[in-house]
Length: 90
Image (cartoon, rainbow, N blue to C red; front, side, top):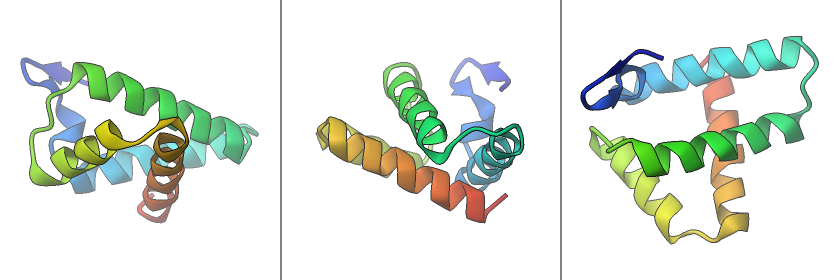
């Protein structure tokens, strides 16, 4: 991911982010990663983004707000759903 002064540029556009993440999910599956491992990685990415990236649009802001109010199990659910959404957009 390229980064600018406002964080990773790939996540400024939600459609670009879904496609980018979807392509990574497909690659992970091709090398044999399980759905559980992919979801765990998505959770870790979500934690990183929550701490390091200021959402640049309303879609990203809404996801961050959901993430912020969720407990650990709910955050894992959000991560799993993001993986499914991304995979559909790969």
